[in-house]
Length: 367
Image 1 (spheres, helix red, strand yellow):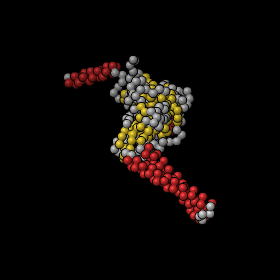
Image 2 (cartoon, rainbow, N blue to C red):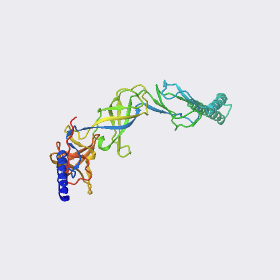
Image 3 (tube, rainbow, N blue to C red):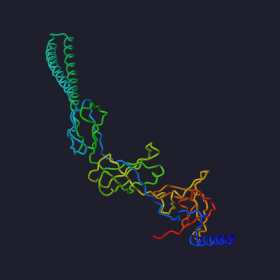
Image 4 (cartoon, rainbow, N blue to C red):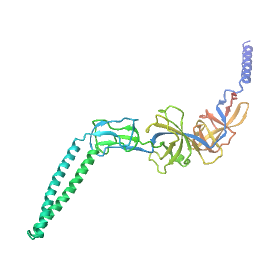
């Protein structure tokens, strides 16, 4: 009786298993994977780069003499006119030197007047043979020396006056103050930048691209520029300069994109994000791009993927295939060799697959 009951239970269990298999065609031994069909796409990718807003006419302003800055008349964002006083140094020392030079000049001019009068008298007396030739030549030499001294003193006055004038920092042109680098009461020298001045030149964004991209760019290509500090829609721009010399930072090359228009509130030094389309091979042909998660690497360094073959009844066979990859795009990685559009690949869950292993390929729901 016990054997009979056990036999019924076994038969019932087998029948139950059979029903479950009919309901779920993916049997437990099959490894389920995420898959997708390979398609070709345009040979263009979008790249984004961080850059800095700059101005073609951005000037760094410094005093031409050293001293303590005692006054500052402008701040960031202020509009200025050519010749406007922007800041002042303590001019006490330079004023004293100028006044001393003036005093020396006046003294020299008085001495010159005396030597000239003596020379004129000596000239008359010498012609009358009332003095010797040596006395006349001495008077002449004193007069010529006086002339030379006055010329030198005049130059010293001029120099001192110029130095005194340099204690005022003037705007070299109309523009807007882009930054203030020094504050009042600081001791400065000609090497210290006091202000940066945007003289209303065209703004541009400078950014760096890799050596693999720089050769694909062309002058005049459009870009889109987004600046978080400036509200509104992204700004249109065009590539105006592509450097042929590396910046020295990871073999990158500076690129300048000129802004088509300058929005209100834009300032040199702001951070910007530049987006542009890059034609990977300078052709119009299609390319194959797959998810990065689909690509594996074996112990020899070869990159490979699993292609799903013989798909039938939600089952397929995973086949390992070596591929050659190209550029990384914003949607995945380009496949140069080893894969064709229309094939199915394992996009996720390929970590422990073996070539030839059966995999579950569940039907995808239609949107």
